[in-house]
Image (tube, rainbow, N blue to C red):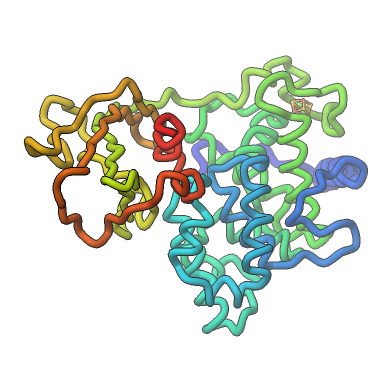
Length: 361
Ligand code: SF4
C-alpha cells in the first residue's frame, strides 16, 4: 500500500544520531524479561517465537507466568511439537485469543518435522508458518537472528507518531509510521535486535501512553512532538464503532454426587477447543435465547450471578442458572463431562468461565 503522505526524509547523520542515542539508552535501561538474551548472549529463537506469539494483543506482565510455564513444561520446540494439543490448549487457558494456541502447536510441529527444529531466519519464510504475520516475522528476524527488519508494535506506533509529530489518526497513519520506522531500521546491520527491543522498551517505559517522561527520554532533543508540545495527544486514533452486546445463559449443572458439568468446546470458533461450562447460544436478542437444557424435572433456576466479559468484537453478558439433575438420568453428548466440585478450581478455563466458577464456589 502506498503511504497517503510521504514521510520526510531523514539525513544519514540524523538517522545515526537517533540510533546511537536510543541504543546507548538501551544499554543502560533495557528491561530484563525471561525470554530475552542478556548483553552479549545469543537469543533462543524458540523463546523469542513463543514470547512473540504470546505478546500478540497481550501485555508483558500477563505473558510472563505463561511463558515460564510453557518453557518449563516444553523446554524445546520438539517437546512442544510432541505435546498433546489439548494439554497445550489447557496450558494456554486464561491468556485469551485461543486460536493462537492452536496455531502455536501447529507451528511447533511444522518447525520440528519440516525444518528439523530450526526456525527460518527471514520474514518471507517465517510468514508461511501458522500464526506468524508481518509483525511476528519481523520481530523474530530482528530479535532472534539479529537481522535487519522493521518491527512495529503499539509501542513503536506511539514513539514514531510522537517523534515525527504525525497528526493523522491511526490506522490511516500506519503507512507513514512504517516508512519512518523503515528509514530507521531497514538495511541497518548494527544491532538490529537491540534496536527493535530498544524502541519497544522506550515506548513501554518512557514514551508511555499517559504522561510520557520526556525529561528522561534519549530522543527528547530532536522529538518533533515534544518540541511542538502536542506529544501527549499523539497518536490520534479514529473513533472505533461501538461494540454490540451479546446475551446468554451460563449453567452450574450438578448431579447427585455434587459433581459439576463441564464442556469441551468444539475445536473451531470462539474459545475453540477450550474447556468451559455449558452455556446457551449467545445472541443480541435475549428474548429469543433458549435454555441449554429445559424440562419439568430440570428447570433452570436463576441465580444472582452474572458474568460480563469483553471480547474483541463484542461485549458478553451471561446470566447464571443452576440445574440440579439429582433425580433423573440425563444423557449428555461426549464433549460434556463431570468434574468433582473440589476440582473445579483446578480446571484450566478461559477467564469468562473462571469468573462464573469463582462466583459459584
Ligand atoms: S521526547 Fe517525549 S514524546 Fe518524544 S519520544 Fe521521547 S518520551 Fe516520547
